[in-house]
Length: 227
Image (cartoon, rainbow, N blue to C red; front, side):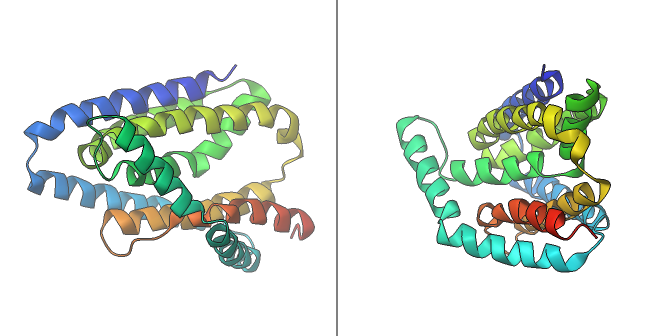
């Protein structure tokens, strides 16, 4: 079962609906300060994740190589085009729908609690970590949905598919994942989360989706160079 992931997706759905509803009653200045608070909190979270890095050199190579591969595959552009086509087909969608899906999905899915929670549920059946994460994501989705609207709601499906798949996969690979590999993977994810924080604060529009292949490369490098 993937109970933790289902509950997590449900809180994202519920939180985003609340945020969409509250949007009409919240002025721009309150929306801005809420985003700034979430952006600063996201950067704090990313820094705590990056502190888990045991060997920074493979992480650097993974992020750079992953970004190059992601750009070569045009991951960011392809997803934005797909999101725009979906927005055109569904009335009422805002122009930043795709940006909301990408940013919210990365924020919700790339983190220490995601990896450790899915591993814990997959290996032991205990989904307590994912329940805690669900509560946090529910509050975050309220704030995000005041700007990105239905894009955050759609990210709930990404949470369900990604975390559910990772939980099922953990049943087979979890016992063979070393603490070193998990630490490197979490640290690399922290760099991607930092990009989301920078975007939330309006510092720099980081092409986060193009950096996603770095998570695959850090797994490979961690297995080849386990120290």
